[in-house]
Length: 112
Image: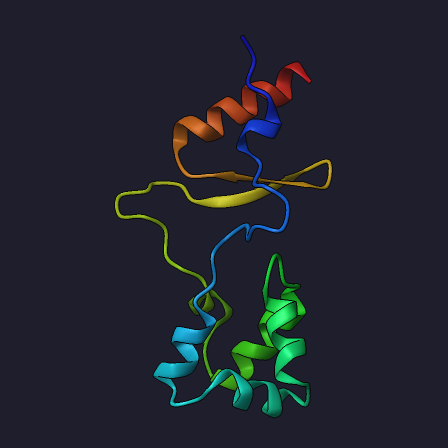
């Protein structure tokens, strides 16, 4: 029985990979309002753009203001996870958190 790709997809409006922007900003002594001001945008605009699935360019801007690498804005994968990431299949995000999930996805794609 093949695995449906949709079974690995996230619900609409849920982040593909959870962010920790607020925590990073706080560690740098900044509020989200200050981050937004440094970017030249309104804090509500920043908040809206970070909810859901923000663009890489937006994350890059935030990382530059905070003086960190973009990767530091993401929550780290669970302990012991050998694989953790997101793959886009036909434009839909598919999150994989283990070797087994990746193998199931590959098998589902072979039969697609």
